[in-house]
View 1: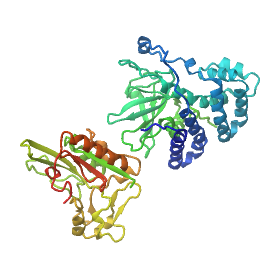
View 2: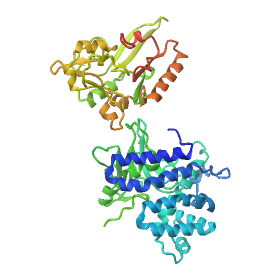
View 3: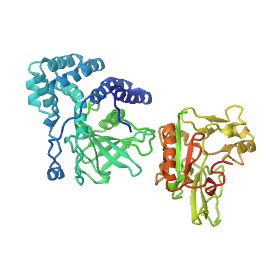
View 4: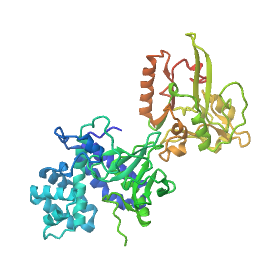
Length: 299
Length: 214
């Protein structure tokens, strides 16, 4: 697959793909449409970023072999001005797409543009999951932490993916056998089967890095008992599935590309299977990684 | 010319006949009674129940060395299909999206002999009972749903690949050039005229009498 080289190409690649989802599953058009502009613009933001300099990165093969990811979350820190610029492009789209949290998104926008130092601290607090720091930064403002995480997570995404793509190739012989990301340590949002042999790849929910993983193993608890692993799919769309683990009751959505003609951009493949999130969560399973679209509230 | 194409790189084919079986299975075609004729080529010809067969050809090349060629035969899905010469309505249609040449049940009203003569590759066959004409469908039902044709999916060696037409034509020409270094007679068969493009290492006649057309 040819990587997009310009912002326009990057935008159109995602925009076109989500447009296709809307045609294929019109019942979920409102969800796809809500994320369409934000994710496409996010791809355009990423296409314009310069590679992150990792020349001083020290790779410790022993720690890596023991399951320690290459980067700590602070290596994903973003310079305040760049973050503000990205927020300036993405937040108005979010406000338009998610009217129920529009007021809160406006407050987030104000916070981000108040000072670049505060903005950097806020981004770091969100990506490292530091709830105390989030509360401190929010102060007395009327913002739900969930809305804040949602917005900052989407703004952060292009930067995180760009950082992961900027990493130098690993020395030969370094293998990773964990279900979490070898780059940042986050859980996978997507599983992909591809090639004639059906190699399984997992895609990180934070930095987008992809790594090989065992075909019959739960990424979240390591369970390899095939009687406790199940695949659920909808008739007529059997290349899209949810891989369930009865042991830890978690799942990851998966796409089987073995007999597919067209590539699906992996960045948005999980969004296209949101109908499976609904079905599986109804059965009492929870997503192994939270994505902006897979936290479904029951009414 | 958009749509899709299939590249058949015969230099990678091991004649496993996985494609032949996958075609039968997907299209729900009945098994054919066969007999030992001293060749692995089995059944001996296309029929209304066999849209695709692997031709086996052995002999002695100009260099004095023995050859054993495999040619997985099927409809070429011509860009200007000769088999459509007799068509008056929609007995045979070309799918605008995929480019597949599709025979409809209305082909029972076509003159079989004329249709067969219109095909340079001797592909169409007729169902003796229904009189409907048959051949490879390009797995148009699968392709229309974003899936690879059954034969391409089944091919374990990568001899068959499927993709956008311009990419496959480019790949065929590239492969021809690569093979020419070791096999001067290597050729991509009429890539500008057909959708199923074969790449051969040797004279087409040494593979099958109609490999390059009558």
